[in-house]
Length: 84
Image 1: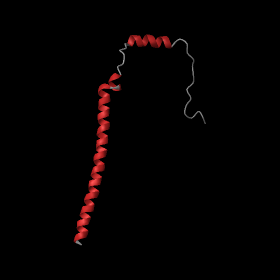
Image 2: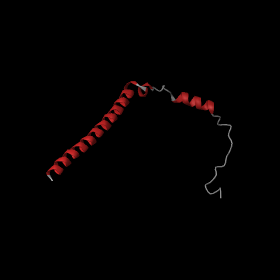
Image 3: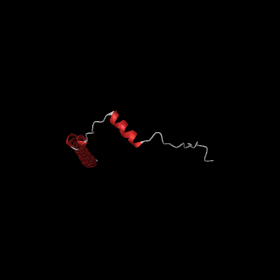
């Protein structure tokens, strides 16, 4: 009975230590991923994106050049129950 208790405690200790080691490895991997993302955000592609400054007047002129509001065609929008 005493030997069963001692060996059981030793076995349980090994099992718990194994699960702690696995959890530590997972935590280390997650930490590496977080640190990699931080490094990328400081010096990498996230900071490299710098949109150009635009003005509303330039956008309006560009849109007016693409769309002719005087040349259009009426199209009927189908209602949901028209297909029956």
